[in-house]
Length: 83
Image 1: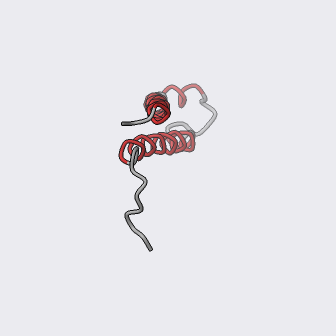
Image 2: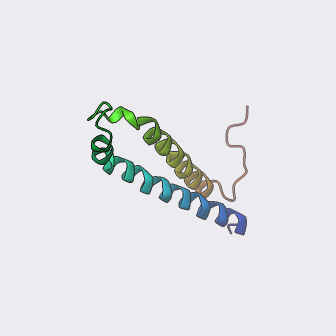
Image 3: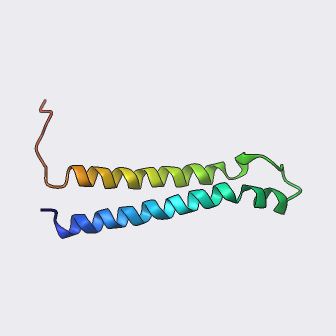
């Protein structure tokens, strides 16, 4: 049986992952709009917002990792690799 706070943690992690996925797709589609909006800058380069894309990807991957690990290790605290 999974505790209620674990269910809440999984739900919050899923909401964070879904928001990151939405923002990542939004930033990928918005590349053409940003290049034409600033004609004085280097147009056509994807490096202008690459840091934002990588950060969104990193946070989304962390949320997905939290979801998977919480589901797998929910009721298990055994030490499987004792030293």
